[in-house]
Image 1 (cartoon, rainbow, N blue to C red):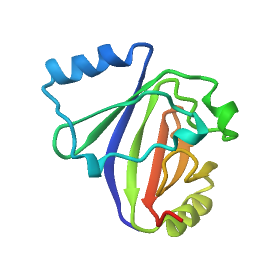
Image 2 (image 1 turned 180 degrees about the vertical axis):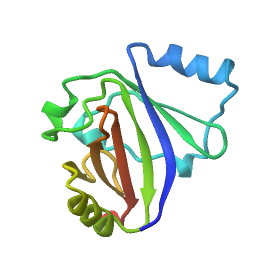
Image 3 (image 1 turned 60 degrees about the horizontal axis):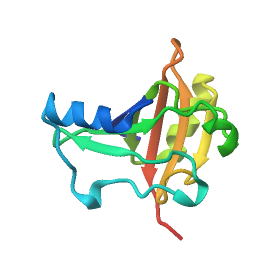
Image 4 (image 1 turned 90 degrees about the vertical axis):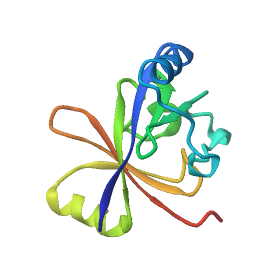
Length: 138
């Protein structure tokens, strides 16, 4: 069960302004289209998202949406502040690890991103952490 930092998600009331800032001020760029997550637009959960990268770590810039959790039916990841995301090579083992640690989590499956099995949970300060694994899309 290996974890690797994959992306940082920041929420904003003005995604185009955030996108311009990270591109112009921090000189981040587009990622290869094949590296971008295939958002599940059928669910209408996140709206328009901007993606930038330093070449290794992606940034997902999403609209602030505190009601996202109610529409999705999941309790964690309200898109209020954002989150840090890790990729794992064994989601089942990681979920067992969370269970053993007594960490409550919200299992999103592939509801938000087609082909990613995602779980979300909080750290002790209330920051949202995502862990996902690439899975076969059926």
